[in-house]
Length: 338
Image (cartoon, rainbow, N blue to C red; front, side, top):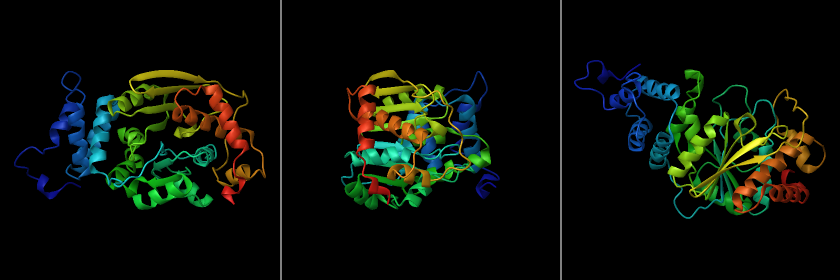
């Protein structure tokens, strides 16, 4: 289970001080500094820590709850270790998609298409398979015949040709992908599930992020500010994905430079959304083509698109963004999903 060299160590393992810092009890433990977080997570990504140390580290952080400084340091380490795009690949909007869908169809994909069709370059990234019973973005996109890249070269070509690309995490940061896959083994989410949403591998000027728990929104905002993210938006989305719940009031945390504010996107219906038996992509295709109606799906797409437009266009009020999103929906190219 552990490396042979650990059986009779001549000296303390280099990673041990980080575990001790987090786990030395109520009076002796403390949070990591940003530099310590970068050092420790870099060791994990380079496979320089024992498996037992990694598990202890992640769960101690989970119990303590990570700080913005720790998250920023973890992201620093990931950006240093991951495969960088190189060249001059640019995206307008970074769209992390790591949760998958369980109770609703992945309507957010249609919002991505609307934005790309309107001329915005959208890079999505994510990981699949870490939670049973969910439909993940990569599989959904493949079923719809939409761009999924294997490397940064393909990302560049797809962004140039269609304004949209999805790159799986395993293709640009394999060690981090493997850490995400620990969720079924640990039985809990870890800070890894949070920091992936802040990677922004192309350093897009705008980043839109979803959370499972509202209490995490200020944490995301503080970490984004430490990372120098120009504009970022965080809200509690459906199932943890970047997708509005039309039946719920949505508090949106918007960061623009050093200025942060909270906005309210009111619910557009009081009707309760019925859970689907199994998330599928055919309802998306039918709604996009106009061969079927789905009030919940349409509202989710328009609401999600509106938030992204408000992020991409500083000064655009939410009501104006909603009107712009409705116009994009009405003028969409229905042949896109033929």
